[in-house]
Amino acid sequence: MNQSLPAWLAEVKASENCFIIALHCQPGAKNTEVQGEHDGRLKIRLAAPPIEGKANEALIQWLSKTLEIKRSQIELLAGDLSRLKRVKIAGITAEQLLQLIP
Image 1 (tube, helix red, strand yellow):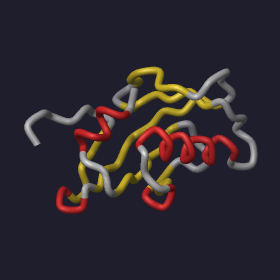
Image 2 (tube, helix red, strand yellow; image 1 turned 90 degrees about the horizontal axis):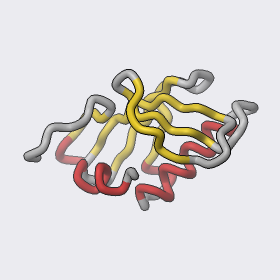
Image 3 (cartoon, helix red, strand yellow; image 1 turned 120 degrees about the vertical axis):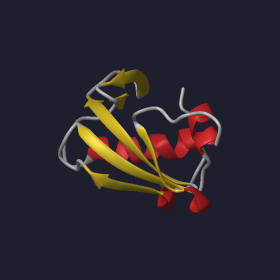
């Protein structure tokens, strides 16, 4: 890959197109959208309350739809009860990922 990856994106296995995204999530927003970068993480506002995993579910659904991949290709690695999350994404190239995230 020619271009360097942003701070919030880390490649795990190039051969499998597997990446980890560091996120700063803000639940309870009006719309689910990318807000930019925040402390080396991709900031995402979620239109779901931080109650009973609803924000995590909304995040996974949004990532699946935005990146045009199956939910099974997304795994929440860390941050289940935190705004700071790490998500593993499989089956997509870095170029596709960077192009699809608005």
